[in-house]
Length: 81
Image 1 (tube, rainbow, N blue to C red):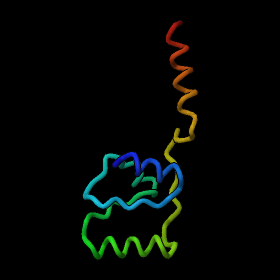
Image 2 (image 1 turned 120 degrees about the vertical axis):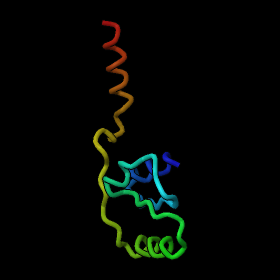
Image 3 (image 1 turned 90 degrees about the vertical axis):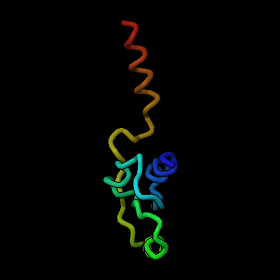
Image 4 (image 1 turned 135 degrees about the vertical axis):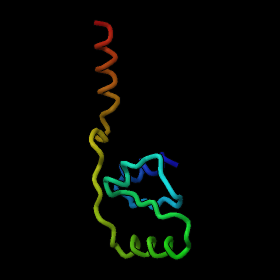
């Protein structure tokens, strides 16, 4: 489930997590995801807020810039020194 939370964060798409917790808490603290549980009324109200555009604009976590592969290569190249 964490993959979807990460992908929606990277794409700027609102995410509602229908569980009691998340293994990706940074998506909640950065405002791109809300953990809302499984109560039907809460799910509906949360979805309604998203559909009505009442979703705060979250932000990408530090280093979620799509450049991880380049940073990894630089680390690996530096290991041989």
